[in-house]
Length: 107
Image (cartoon, rainbow, N blue to C red):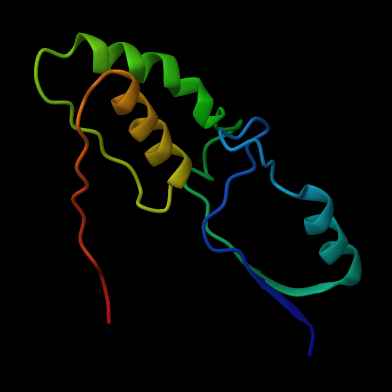
Protein backbone atom coordinates (compact mmCIF):
# COMPACT_ATOMS: atom_id res chain seq x y z
CA UNK A 1 0.00 0.00 0.00
CA UNK A 2 2.87 2.37 0.74
CA UNK A 3 5.79 3.28 2.93
CA UNK A 4 5.18 3.44 6.68
CA UNK A 5 7.87 4.90 8.93
CA UNK A 6 7.95 4.13 12.65
CA UNK A 7 10.82 6.10 14.13
CA UNK A 8 10.92 4.98 17.71
CA UNK A 9 12.79 7.50 19.87
CA UNK A 10 15.05 9.93 18.05
CA UNK A 11 16.49 13.41 18.29
CA UNK A 12 17.65 15.72 15.52
CA UNK A 13 20.69 16.90 17.45
CA UNK A 14 23.05 19.06 15.35
CA UNK A 15 25.99 18.18 17.62
CA UNK A 16 25.28 14.72 19.09
CA UNK A 17 27.67 13.38 21.72
CA UNK A 18 28.56 10.37 19.51
CA UNK A 19 29.33 12.69 16.55
CA UNK A 20 26.83 10.78 14.38
CA UNK A 21 24.26 13.36 13.29
CA UNK A 22 20.68 12.49 12.39
CA UNK A 23 20.55 11.53 8.69
CA UNK A 24 18.14 14.22 7.58
CA UNK A 25 18.86 13.51 3.90
CA UNK A 26 17.74 9.87 4.25
CA UNK A 27 14.62 11.06 6.03
CA UNK A 28 13.96 13.54 3.17
CA UNK A 29 14.45 10.80 0.54
CA UNK A 30 11.67 8.78 2.13
CA UNK A 31 9.47 11.87 2.02
CA UNK A 32 10.19 12.37 -1.68
CA UNK A 33 9.25 8.75 -2.40
CA UNK A 34 5.94 9.26 -0.66
CA UNK A 35 5.05 8.15 2.84
CA UNK A 36 1.66 6.69 3.64
CA UNK A 37 2.10 7.18 7.40
CA UNK A 38 4.71 8.44 9.85
CA UNK A 39 4.48 7.14 13.41
CA UNK A 40 6.64 9.32 15.60
CA UNK A 41 6.92 10.47 19.19
CA UNK A 42 8.36 13.78 20.29
CA UNK A 43 8.63 15.03 23.85
CA UNK A 44 7.56 18.68 24.19
CA UNK A 45 6.41 18.92 20.58
CA UNK A 46 3.79 21.45 21.67
CA UNK A 47 6.50 23.90 22.74
CA UNK A 48 7.88 26.34 20.17
CA UNK A 49 11.57 26.33 19.30
CA UNK A 50 13.98 23.45 19.61
CA UNK A 51 15.71 21.43 22.29
CA UNK A 52 19.43 22.17 22.65
CA UNK A 53 22.00 19.48 22.04
CA UNK A 54 22.62 16.96 24.82
CA UNK A 55 26.11 18.45 24.97
CA UNK A 56 24.56 21.62 26.43
CA UNK A 57 24.10 19.95 29.83
CA UNK A 58 27.55 18.38 30.11
CA UNK A 59 29.44 21.21 31.83
CA UNK A 60 26.66 21.85 34.36
CA UNK A 61 26.33 18.14 35.17
CA UNK A 62 30.07 17.87 35.65
CA UNK A 63 29.98 20.86 37.99
CA UNK A 64 27.20 19.20 40.02
CA UNK A 65 29.02 15.84 40.12
CA UNK A 66 32.19 17.55 41.40
CA UNK A 67 30.47 19.73 44.01
CA UNK A 68 27.95 17.26 45.44
CA UNK A 69 29.10 16.19 48.91
CA UNK A 70 27.32 12.85 48.66
CA UNK A 71 25.35 10.86 46.11
CA UNK A 72 24.13 12.28 42.82
CA UNK A 73 20.78 11.02 41.54
CA UNK A 74 20.06 11.59 37.88
CA UNK A 75 16.90 10.63 36.03
CA UNK A 76 16.29 10.41 32.29
CA UNK A 77 14.47 8.32 29.73
CA UNK A 78 16.07 4.90 29.32
CA UNK A 79 16.11 5.48 25.57
CA UNK A 80 18.26 8.60 26.00
CA UNK A 81 21.48 6.69 25.43
CA UNK A 82 23.49 9.87 24.83
CA UNK A 83 22.50 11.35 28.18
CA UNK A 84 23.23 8.07 29.94
CA UNK A 85 26.67 7.98 28.29
CA UNK A 86 27.32 11.58 29.38
CA UNK A 87 26.51 10.61 32.98
CA UNK A 88 28.78 7.54 32.79
CA UNK A 89 31.65 9.62 31.35
CA UNK A 90 31.27 12.32 33.99
CA UNK A 91 31.09 9.74 36.79
CA UNK A 92 34.31 8.17 35.53
CA UNK A 93 36.11 11.51 35.21
CA UNK A 94 35.05 12.62 38.70
CA UNK A 95 35.85 9.32 40.42
CA UNK A 96 32.24 8.46 41.21
CA UNK A 97 30.62 5.05 41.03
CA UNK A 98 27.49 4.63 38.98
CA UNK A 99 24.45 2.36 39.35
CA UNK A 100 21.41 1.96 37.16
CA UNK A 101 17.89 1.45 38.47
CA UNK A 102 14.94 0.87 36.20
CA UNK A 103 11.88 -1.18 35.57
CA UNK A 104 10.96 -3.35 32.65
CA UNK A 105 7.47 -2.69 31.30
CA UNK A 106 5.25 -4.99 29.36
CA UNK A 107 5.60 -8.61 28.28
